[in-house]
Length: 469
Image 1 (cartoon, helix red, strand yellow):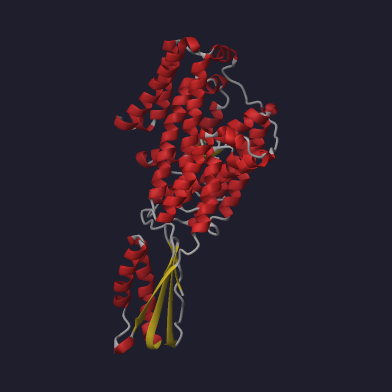
Image 2 (image 1 turned 135 degrees about the vertical axis):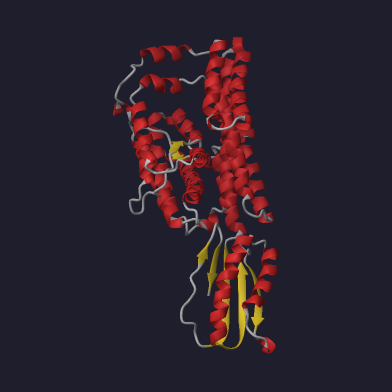
């Protein structure tokens, strides 16, 4: 999957070093599918989720208004809350089973979580970047000190050979319609996250970067989906491009896509070391809970940052508020949702599903009536048609409509050039009509006279498109 993303194979692959990780986005749905229907259902549904992400790639430009920053942020916030809930369930269940060592369970989780937090906040360099891994190792040490290692940990480790080729004979597949919605949402959320990760990659590798290359991002999201499908075929959990690994690239400056081949080689080697895999698979549950809680907190705040990356209007406030409140009602009132008809479980079965089911339709409804219009007449009363008059008018309008300064500057640049062409061809006044919603700015110039020799192309920025007619 790392190599596929680093290539440019027509419509697949971004050409950037963008390694994947087993994504927390797929974790809640995968656990539920494994508990209800077993491992074959996880493999089959992960492949389905990858196919959904491929479909998302083809629709990025067409349906971008349905998935703005506010909806993407809500989904990521819901993932963080879901991970926190899973972490609490894992820890409390382990503590209940270890009635004689309840304190040890909580102490182990605290040691692991404390190590992660201390390194993330106060450390520098590699210790800061590897805070999660070092915290897990500290959790293993605490597990040994408090003697709460499960017996299966040592049994499985002793039985595992040092070197063995992976055996694919255990892999089988099943498709479970009851999990279609939850895995489709996971694929959608993964695609939204990849958009942000690849935008960061573009910024790092292009000193003259101005705005996202959506065609490149579309190819990258499609590669991420294809990789997830192939992973499902090989029995791997759901995977997605990792923001943290791209952050490591940014910090170290090692972003050459040639590195992808080295990464893939090391992973192939590690896949042939069962003892190494056993250390991860049999991770003590208090340590697992700490890692999930830590990553859930990071996901939660990342979602908040995404929401706050654009102006928070009253509509956005209601989308976030209604969606999050509805989502957290799922774990608070589980008996109520279980009492609903069976077909509703795919929409209300998790915090993430509920967040998407509420936020996407609500955002679509709130798009109604978002267009605002204004107009300006240049050249009246024998005054010359100049770009300066439009700039003064649009600067005031942009403040009123809360258009970001960068977007407003691009609009002025495009329209100013158009006004110069129109002024040379107009016989009389020029009427300028400006319309805007949360995504697009449409500027229309009307005048009597000769048509301009050539039209001006549209310009597209980070989440807002300027179009000139």
